[in-house]
Amino acid sequence: MKQLKEQLSTLFDKYLDEFKEINEYIYNNPEIGKQEFKACEILSNTLKKYGFETTVNYANIPTAFLGKFSSGKNGPKIAILAEYDALPEIGHGCGHNIFGVTSIATGILLKEVMQDTIGEILVIGTPAEETFGAKVEMAELGIFDDIDIAMAVHPTGESHKRSGSSQAMEAIQFTFKGKTAHAAASPHEGINALDGVITLFNSINALRQQTLETSRIHGIISNGGEAANIIPDLAVANFYVRAKTLSYLKELVEKVKNCAKGAALATGTTLEIENYETSFANLVTNKKLSEIYEKNLKLQGVTEIGDGGSSGSTDMGDVSHCCPTIHPHFPLTKAHLIGHSVEFANATIQPEAYIGMKEATLAMALTAMDIFNNKDLLAEIKTEFINNKNL
Image 1 (tube, rainbow, N blue to C red):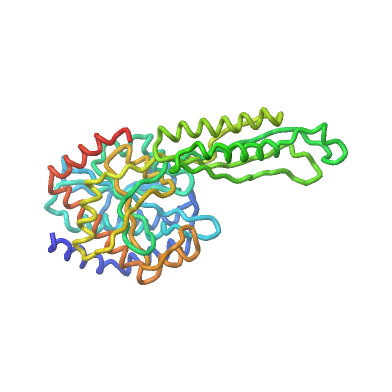
Image 2 (image 1 turned 135 degrees about the vertical axis):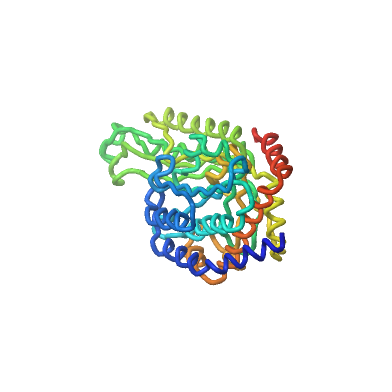
């Protein structure tokens, strides 16, 4: 395995200038979810250049792609997932530019070293993780059902972090409707939609004491009226509701919706409830697969590996309910970084970032080779997945 590690390291260094160019191109051309046409094109074309069979508009998603390489039938199918969407205004503040390049780099290196290995590599471009979450749609289509393992590694600061967990999430929009009136001359003739939203916030704040500590409910008023002297006939609140498991999320969402219904009843408004973004399942890390990845980080001399813990929400959670999955993190810098910031985006193109990227790329490639060459190991990973299916 040390010899293979050295071979992969040499290959990474060989292609590094090209990886840097692609990373900086995506960084300099940030595209929000569903609009990542430039990123999709350069990532998929690079895979095609190195011998992958590529498909764009994958799963009928215009900015999704599939890169496939098979060295023989009846071997394990390993998926490396790529993200490349940016954030509004601050560009790649979540680092998805280097995320996407790390994923295709892993596929390219794997193809180079598996001539005598039977298996299939799938590099899947998954758009819009920040918003509608293409992996959710792909999971619903059954794309991950016949995949043996799935991996993706996200950039962060400080140190490598193990694959942890993420929260199941539902994005809910509450629209209250009332009746306009002059706020000073005839307020009694109006029905105040903003009162409905404010009552909703107060009801949710009262609910918090009776929720699990691991849950999160946070929202904004996206429309609160047009002028202070007009009773608003329309007010809108957008909320994220998060929980550690899908089962508790369902319970909590029902309570939040009841808060809204009560607010509408109390204020005489009418209420519409809808999802404004895609809901995500919780991430269930396959511990055995995570152990193998961590072993392959240590093989490279990495000694500092932190706990991933529970963080936000990601559509990788939906993948983890379809097949054994890990979603660890690699460091862009040893300094602390705040996610979704300009500083985070800038860190993705600094020389230090490519150290962590190389370690993550080699660890994923080595993990894939472990699985390609060890049927018992794959069986153990799958047994754990089946046992944890309902978590």
